[in-house]
Structures are given as structure tokens and as C-alpha cells.
Image (cartoon, rainbow, N blue to C red):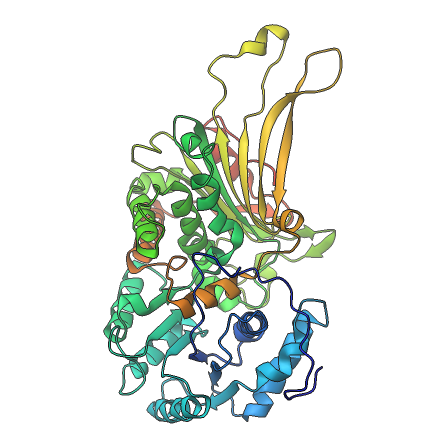
Length: 523
């Protein structure tokens, strides 16, 4: 730990991943960052480490302040110490963790306690913010981050609508709000939450966050496709046979049973992560590289999704739940044996489905989506599987069943991409085997990409909403989830399939794609 004060030696900083001179990087503005849920896990494990790293990289203005708000009573110093301990537990003293920056960073952290539905808290918040802004010479720009359970969104937003806490867009120093997922639990609740948010904030002030969109490899989808002349001509039904999007988790519910029992994988993953990845993959090239142009095209892609009738919802989806098994050689319990889970639970922990887009680019190209818990490993990929050549030239030489070309976009854990193609294997006989060209961020650029929350928090400070969901995006994604749920209800919920923990899902998911003459790729 370094000593507090001007004489303290500054640690050597890593190369700044947000490169100076970038056409997209503006100077960060000073602001007050108010985190509702300041003592929560998200704040301790993600938000504070991200803000600390941004400060170390000079991407957080030195006058910016952080105010944690939560129910538990404690002093500013006690709050700082709790955050420091949590950061050490999470990051340790590993190189690049910037633990040595903590003493200077801690000076800007403050704390306020109170109940989120108590008007007195917001009177105290207004006074505390005004005092911090006077002390640090801040212009009154404010960023509210709702790192709280969804049940607290309404009380906080209604109270923020009171005097002196929010300025509408264009009425002076900016005010912005970041809202974590899940944004609603169905279409109607999402619409109601949108109405509430927009009664207090203008849409341009609202940042609905999905941390997947902050990952470098997700942002690289557009760069790979649109900055390289080789790929865009291939990105359509003329060359792509089908698309697979997978969000696999090796973990179970990990203490989130109360939430997961209500949500299941369809509300936890399909509505946000999977639908966002589908929209980015399927969207048309935007007219300009700006937030609204990109989000316009994502919305058009979601609007092109073919409606799911009750019959489609039954025939094109597979829902399943994990049983006991093993992950990396260690035994794990069944979902129904997890703490807090109903022993007769019918909640799905795995979902596979087929979606189709009715537009010129993607007509006839099925999108197969799957996500599940307790799968063999943590992995998220978008895979474009290309059509076979029009003529089986090598059949006369005895070559059968050539593997298709595949462009893999790896979102996690090893961010990068790869391209698989056929090549003659060495030897006198003619054998064609798949080979792979790989790109990894770590090996190509010498460092891991920045954490998603670093990029997203920086973008909120800059007012860049490119990587955040707009109101219509959220509601269109919920329409898909609702149509599936209503289809299940109308025709009777499909039988809940079973799969052992540590397997890639149930046999029924294999059958879903195999009846179209295709198969899931191995991750």
C-alpha cells in the first residue's frame, strides 16, 4: 500500500486500452457517481474495481466522486475499508490490479445510509451531493447507478423524480441513470418500468446495461464484419447455412435460487444476452457509426424475427433442468437439491430454440440459440456455419462428409475468433481434415482486454449509448420470451427434459437441430 499524499510514488501503469487519439474517446468529465446498492456484491466485485482501474488509467476525472447508498449504517471510512477488503479478496496483489492506487482513490468515496423507499433518504442525498460538489468543485453532473434488485427500481426512480436530484436532458449539467438487468420480468412489466423511467428521465439519459455488450469481442463483431472486405460479402443467406449462439455456464444458481426460481434461463439469459448477440450478428450495416444508427439496425433485426405461434413455441424449443453430475471431476447436486430451490421445481435451467428472420439477408437461415447452467464449461460463442460448396468435387476420390467452414466469435472466456476450413492432411492419400486459424486478444495485443464494466462506465460518463439497450430493443426481446411462455401455456408446457450436470444439455436439444440435418458444434 502506498502512503497518502503528494509524495506517494505513483505505480507504473499498464498500457491504456482506451487509447489516446482514438476517434471515439473523449476526455472524461467530472461527475458525482451515486451507486444505489453500495454494499452489494456487484458494487464490491465489479463497479468499484472498474472505477479504480479507470482512475489509474486516467479515464476517470480526478475530481469525480463516488457515493455509495445502502440500508446499512456505517461511516465513510468504514465503507472505504469494506470496499478495500473486498477488492483485495477479489483481486489480491496480482500485477495490474492497481491495489497500490487505492489510497488516492479512496479519498473520493463517500457513503449514505437509508431505506430506498424513505423520502428522507433523498433529502439527505440531495444535501450530501451538494456538499460533495462544493468540496470537489464539481459542476453538478450526476450518474445514478441502480445496482439493486429489480424490486427497488420503482421506489428509487419515483423518489429521484423529486426536486433537485435530476435535470432533464438539455436543462443544465447532465444527469444519467444506469439500470441493471433484469429490466422487467415480462413484456408488460418492462413497458411499465419504461414508462416510469421516462417520467423522470429523457431516453437519452437512460443506460440499460447488459455487461456482455461491454466485452471487446462483442464490439469486435461489427469491426470484424465491416472493417474487413472479406467478411461482409459472406454475411448472408447466400453463404451462411445457419448460425449458432451459445451462452454456457458451468456454475449452478450460486445463492440466487429465489430469483432463478421465478426467472429460469429464458428470462435470465434469453431476453438479454442471447437476444443482444443475435441482434448484433443479424443487423444491417448502419449508415453511420453512432449510437442511434447502430441501435436502429439492431431494432430492425429484432423486428424481423418470425412470430412464434403456440405450435412453434412447442416444436422449436427445448427446456430442461440439470440433475446431479460432475463438473471438472467434482460432484455437484441436482438443481432441485440446491439450497432454496423447490424440491418439485419445474424451472428450466437449459433452453434451446430455433428462431428465423424474415428479411432479405437472412431468409432461410435458422438461428439456433442455447443456454444452460452446469454445462461442461463456461463459454459464449457466436458461430457462423457456412454452406458446403455447390459441387462435391472430391467425391470421386472417395472423400465424403467434408466439415463445413465455421467462423467462431468467442465472447468468453478466451476472447477472440477463429476460422475453420478444410485442408489436405499430409500423406500419399487424399484426406481432407478441418484446420483452424485462431486470433486471441491476449496473444495478439499482449494483454487481456479491459473488463466489460470499465468500458461501459466510461461510455456512460461520455454519454455514448452505443453499447446499451434502447427502450424498443428491450420490449422487442421481451415479445420473443412472452410468445414462448404463452405458447407453452396454450399447448401445455413441454415436458421438462433432464440432463446430468457436466453434459452439453439433454438429448432433446440434439434432436431439435438434428431434424434439420445439422448438429451442435463442440465448444
